[in-house]
Length: 108
Image: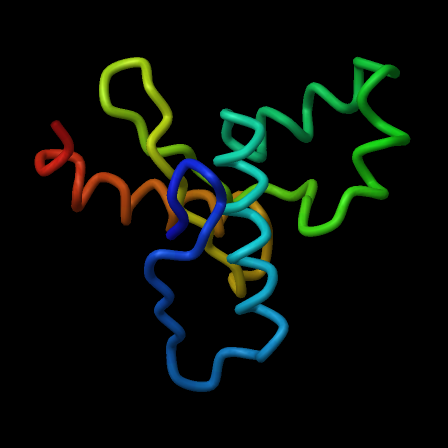
């Protein structure tokens, strides 16, 4: 979980999780927070918007893969959750959304 600036606020790693999953989840959250959108939506946009694609791949810490979900209070992005390690980006995104659902009632 990162704040609106992409700074890590919380990190949870499950037993036997590959070490690369830590960076992947953190980068997905960072990407989502700083781009103000879920990473799956960003990935889809990159497929159709030629002005975004080439430059984004060169920016540090941006990861173009599903699993990053923005945290909003009203319309304001206040952070993001990133999940990684499942066999597929859609499963990572489902995990991130499940985490967001658990805290949604605390967001004001």
